[in-house]
Length: 203
Image (tube, rainbow, N blue to C red):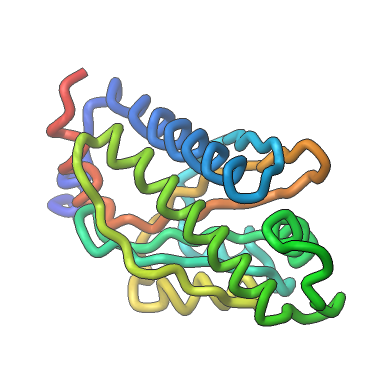
């Protein structure tokens, strides 16, 4: 185990890089959302935690939520999952859809789904662009996937094969002028790869 541990050692001064990644990612997301929904939005990262996957499942809970996840197809690899309530998702979707989109209050209409997926696209690519800027690299991602169900199940599906992994959790909140939308961001990068990228950055 000690071999694996030493792979994760990083200069403590570089931990500020996590803050920069979070901030850059969040700002990029807010800018993109402004343009797409016409809502005045800002994204605020309240705290960053390293959590065990089992703890994340507890943290996320079993309530039905909207999830948008992407896979990083380049270093640091892994996944990013955005979770928000159905109400938040509908509020964001309505900002993008003209008039009544015909969605029911329980499920999501096809139009709402594609609007939420587009929002997911904006959020994930914005977040990753922010990361790439800080890490001084480019990171390709897969197409975002829309899921509606228990948050803990989504984490299980993404991370089931990596039982001992930790993950980075960004507790964040999107403030929209006329709607309070809450979004949580869970990132599951391959930690040794992320540390390797961080080691290459001059501080």
